[in-house]
Image 1: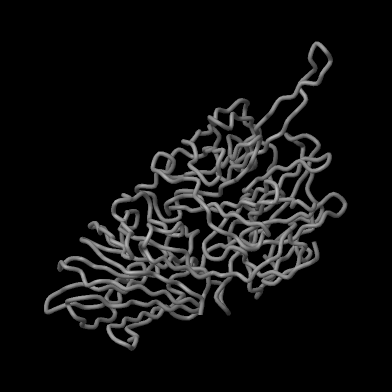
Image 2: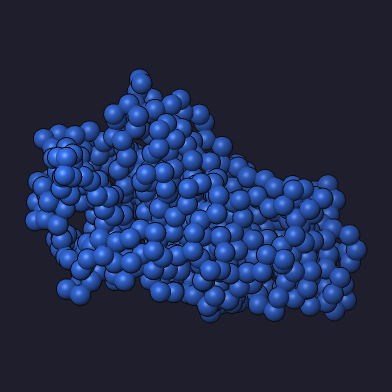
Length: 512
């Protein structure tokens, strides 16, 4: 395949910690989901650049308990692998019992109940191999399938730990052994093991998942080590690339395409211009890999760019990052709720969406307000919906630019003393206030719109032909670096209701 130019990120908006797996000519990729439900989105591609959301690994409360979990708690760093006709996904729920494995024979279908793994740490990974275990009476070789589980913590402190497991049940079949202390960087994590040629390769993330992030590589002839480090580690980092529009790259996973070319997917961030602040979350990037003296060379000698070239396995198409839902045949896959929520609170049919609001509003820091959101994919977007004026005085119905319970903007309609009003409200840590209000008719519906760029979220409403700008909030107010808690997610654009029923007609989000 000839060299093609493609654009990074290949999956934009909040999609961190990517793990990739190829079967035949099909590529599948999963990312972290933290406190959002369903958990662990699954993407499919034929060319490594154009990705389609096809399913989630964790779709019910038995698999994913999130009630009461804090922002950026919940689901951490999945790994996706395929072995002998079965898909396996291992991940950490730091708000439940830790590390577990689920499996399925149909990646687009229902996944199993969790098989919990008795090994500490986060960022779990699986490695499968078929090993010679002896010979039969007739001299024929006998083989044994082994599944290895590794994570970044254990009894001997920070480092990478390995054991054998039953991948269907999670039962540990051997003691956990520390196989690496990393390569000297902060927080060795995200371990992935590959057998390439005569070596086992151990890929890790080090430096923390902020601006010092990077990928390191070690190798050994024995899966338990000792491992030697690549002489030019880190093999990928932007920690010394100040001013680059892509930062914090790391947490990668390797794949070989059907043509024998190697690739890495990794996370990275795109800061707001002229700042060290980002609001879109950690996104998924792609870089070609070549092998030199038995070690990987990633991208442009250890760096990646917004525009890159590589021998893609299929023709890349222009990315379409827009989204719409007409609510005619249920909800599209892109919608997420906050933590666990009753499915019956969201009913989409015949062109309308009914949200049944509970008593929790979007400020509920560890709660489950009646919220449906989609990831904001680019800095400059426009999102619209039509909402009906609520029938009861306590009900609020509207749109939000949402980071977490302490950092979000809202535009909503409510009935109050003297009539109905459309309001803009902001919550930025301990600052909470309605910043703009306009009277509207108590009957019928109105349109709401959020426009975003690198400077502002702007909030509009319309009852006739012309849009009215009601207020603005600074984009920097919804950035990871200014939030008051550990923050690993990104902004969602969503719909919500509080205390009563809210009715919406259509939703669209487009780049502008």
